[in-house]
Amino acid sequence: MSRVHLHDLDFELFIPEAEVNEAVTRVAAELSAKYAGKRPLFVGVLNGSFFFAAELLKRLTIECEITFVKVASYHGTSSTGKVTDLIGFNERIEGRDVVILEDIVDTGNTIVHILDLLRDRHPASISIATLLFKPDAYKQHVAIDHVAIRIPNDFVVGSGLDHNGLGRNLPGIYRIIPNGQ
Ligand code: 5GP
Image (cartoon, rainbow, N blue to C red; front, side, top):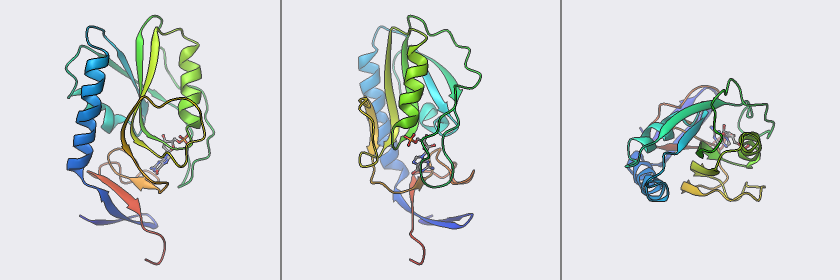
């Protein structure tokens, strides 16, 4: 499937599934080396990170735990940067090595807000791993420690990312086709 129609928008295949898998395998190797002998707690940011979390964790060679957190931050096809608190997150992370898992880092507003909220709970360390990163859209100064794939500033779906609820199940990454093309 090289082209899909979701609600009002058309998308074309941009990064095939095999390439996504390769990138996730590379990040898994980085994290397995970094946390060898430790037992990190992965915190997946819902909804979009479920795909990355599953694909990443099955490739890790270390002991680890996973939990998920929900925040509200995004509507439509451009980032609003408005983040509310962590919803229903009761995990004790004091003294733990925490790795935040994101589907995509765009302006970075969401991840910085999550970082602040998690730091308040005194983990031993926090790092960030993301499936996709848009360097041209990034407005923050926090380093994104582990990036699977860097992409241009286009709206994308697939591999966990949606357009108003649709497209999360698409294997690979699909890029928006501007109207009329
Ligand atoms: P940020 O706060 O970094 O600007 O945005 C992060 C959130 O915006 C992501 O977790 C994701 O929900 C959403 N987002 C940003 N860019 C895209 C995109 O290209 N496609 C989709 N589906 N969501 C995006």
